[in-house]
Image 1: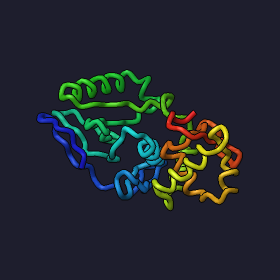
Image 2: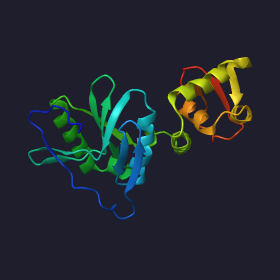
Image 3: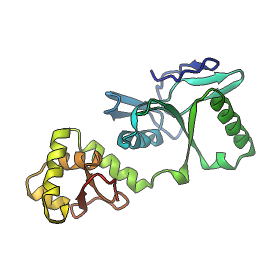
Image 4: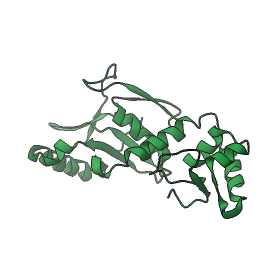
Length: 215
């Protein structure tokens, strides 16, 4: 279990999640980085998992980590993320109504001060700063359709694209060459190929060779 070193903070294990809150549902996300399913309390958490899988600076992560306590203060994060540089960071969704509430602003300021005092990193996930829903939809599609692939197969797809004129090809052109859809999806998700994730992926989507990040 990921637990930052905090001498004066108490970490209390949260109750197992058996059912979702009203209006939400328990979802199990198949995590590669965690080598097993992640139990999410709602679809928002499950959607965010795919972004953590996609980020190269994230080594592993935990959904619904232990509650952080100090005196009367309680902080329940949505995620505890272990970064590749060795640091850990809490992530918590901050809903629009909470951003305008004076009580919530006071609470978030207090929580930030409590965690910063002990060197714990924190990131509020504000809705208008999260990736567009179409980006999430595309990443989710690529992730779930790449499970039957491998790193080696993804690199072979990249080699095929790089060998073409202009180092680019449509998805349809690669399929016509006999490349497996899972391998194409895996190459894009691993960022071995670039594509515009802000447009809906179709067979006519153009993908590019290189490691410069998505367009």
